[in-house]
Image (cartoon, rainbow, N blue to C red; front, side, top):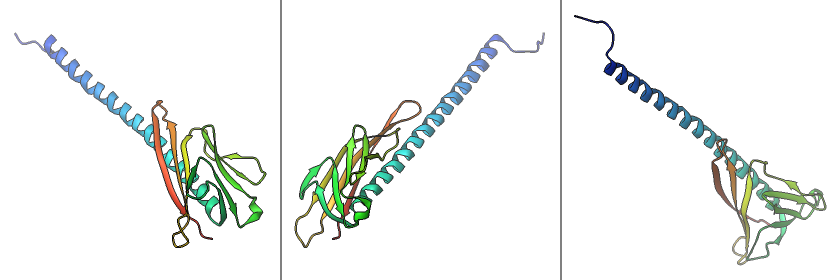
Amino acid sequence: MHQKGFTLIEVLIYLGLFAMLLGGAVVASYSIFESSGRNQTKSMLEEEGDFLLAKINWALSGAQSVNSPTQNATSTFLSVVKWDTSIGNPIIINPVGVNLTVSRGTNPAQVLNNTNVTVSNILFKHTYKSASEPESVDSHFTLTAKTSTGATVSRDFDSTNYLRK
């Protein structure tokens, strides 16, 4: 006697294989979407960090003097007097809560970073050893953001700006 169709064992094996295949596809899709969100957040952090470093570089370019931090000291804020007085002196880059702000002269402070990013561990170091070695300001800060899935991504940023007077 020859019957067409599948036995119960064959059906169970095929269902198990199909479930493993479908489960693997779901896990792979989830990983791809999560990785995409993490990569977007990392890219945003990189852009924000580059923007903040550029603002610090702008503040220090054409600086007549650095009020804070004082020579061979560190500070959590930067105060610079520029030769160009038309923009308003001093320029102050200062952490306020989880934001980094800039103010020019008597104008109110403006937040530099976007609302999805928190700024922490801000430190400026003003180094001046002698007239033969260039005066510099080192900047350090950490940016943190959350991905769309709630994971936290952080990145440290550092730069050194040499002052020309």
